[in-house]
Image (cartoon, rainbow, N blue to C red; front, side):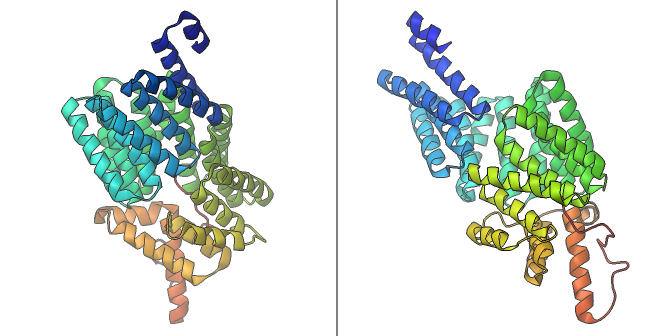
Length: 408
């Protein structure tokens, strides 16, 4: 299409074709080619003085660098996009680009700045009265609330995003909202509502051909099955998600699915297969610069029979407090037996619960695997210290093997 546009001498069509080719290359994880497309198109837009198209290509470059976890470059290009679009006075596009910038800021740990930009984007969405755009902002706010440890507030944003999507009949946006709602309910201790949302999302994705959210939905269903101890179903769903994500070359999704599949296989006693899946996931996470996912995979490898905890502990130190979660600390405790990691897992879990309505605490303790197992282990340790047996009747006690199924 780009070649045809060039032959026709239609600069506007050529520009749009380059942008479309950049998006396609990103979807195929051919990021170097995408970067070339956007840079060439950006040069032409700058030569024409076309600020709107300059913003489009700048945000494309920001997305390319974000996909590679090159966050400083992603931030730079998203900021350039906002500067360019502000010169046009287009409020709606400004809000969209603010949302992109906020995503990079969240990943960089600059949460106060991310909130400031998202609040501005949210205000714009109300001013321009664009429900589809408002739904996107809501989902970004949910991501921020999750990162700040407020899953209940995050879920409220997701539910509103779903309502907005249905009001305007945007079925792809509806599928995306549902696939975000499912894991949210799972982590709030309601596996049945989680399954209903994920089943609905997968069905809708298959109807409209939305492969990316379908991969997320299948993974979410696998995590629910693993929480409930149905390891055969969890493995089937994880392998289905992995095959889909490999086919569409969704590399970040492949990493997440490999790590979860490795944990399911370990739960099932398939140590060799678990090791292979986890090692592949860690290698790809490192290639993508996804340090937190690499650390998680290394912790799971360390927890396998004969595993080495040193690489996981080194990865934890490199995170320097970023992306520290109850799941990661609990896995490190299982790998090392170090009480420090169990205490930190309990502290982080308690901190999360303080931000959630009290009526949801017991369902979380009962139904969320990581919470259930941390509490069982922590109360067991306390009983040992006290010299008494409190294994029976303690809140959150479980006979299941002490492994977790993380959420995406």
